[in-house]
Amino acid sequence: MANKNSHPLVSYQPFRLLFQLASVGTIVVRLPFWAAIALIRPLRPHPKWTAKQTFTVHLMHAIIGMSSRISITLPLSIEGGKEGDRFQVIKPRSPDRYIGPLESNDVKPATVGGTWYPDVPAADIASKLVVLYLHGGAFVLGDGRPGETGFATKSWLEHGGADAVFALQYRLAGYSNRDPFPAALQDTLTSYLFLLEDLQIPARQIVVSGDSAGGNLAIALLRYLHEFGAELGIPVPRCAALVSPWVTPLTYDALPRTPNWRTDWVPTAFLKWGANAYAGRFAANPKSEYHPYITPLGNPFPAPVPIFVNAGAAEVFAPDIARWAEEMGEQEEEEEGGNVVELHYEEAACHDTLMLGNAFGFEESAWGVAAKMGEFVRRY
Image (cartoon, rainbow, N blue to C red; front, top):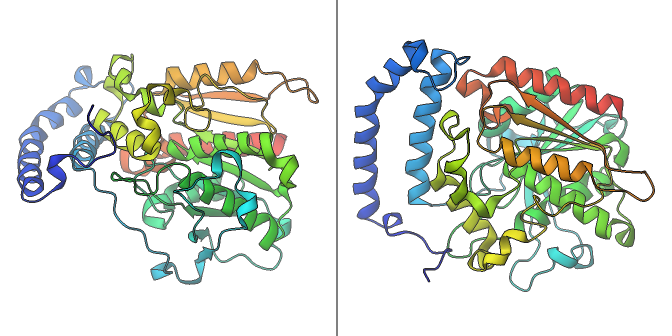
């Protein structure tokens, strides 16, 4: 059996250059076709989409598909760069905080960073509503800086009622066993403990939010706090707010058969790259699709906090997200009487408008989602 964690042939030169040239050529040839589909309303994949939404979804699908077949995870810097003091470097906690699924002989907790929005927190940060934001990108793309998460964090600040947002730059996974699971989840815990212990922000003032792969990490953090939080003395956050969470990473090959496959920008190659790189050694084992910290669907648990979850009504993950929300809602929490899980459908929306709404023309739709999340946070 082929190694699912190996780079494909087109990752290497000169094959990479030849593949890129050929792919760019096919994209250029298809541009007039996509423009025609966008301009002629009956041809659009979704009747409520605008011309911009239709064209950009087709274009993004092709571009992401091309880069995903090359499958090269770019290195991240923990230097402040143009973010300056807004970029915070965080050192890992002691090893005894990373137990159970976060303990690994091969993957150790590491120094990571994150960006504050709108600015460096003031001395009164402990009295503010702080969102710990975990970006999407299939575990292989993204960095938490403004170029990647600026729209999402602005939406939280201007429409979701957040006073401050800390966007974590967790380690990205890559082929050849670069920072696979549980690296990103270790970093997620590190950032949460940083807010609690270094900045002394009360847990009730922290909202854990994530989209796509970041939503997967947020769910895994809640599971970890449920299973080990009391033992480790780690309090739970106020609530969680998820947008298009990726709840079935290792069943990506089944997604082209879902009803919304033609109304989304997510190509199979992207999901394959992210799933196999992040799952690492687990990807070679068919039973790994049931790993509770990698695949939330099919692994419900008593959630320690209320959860808001948004799914684009036209996104490819919508059926899986709905099933996950349903099975989580059926879980019984002994002390509280049951999980609080609120599912919201974003009308006519594709995957993860909170992060990419400004690129696709779904700005107002994403702002509406942020407002819904803000209402949920205030309610609990």
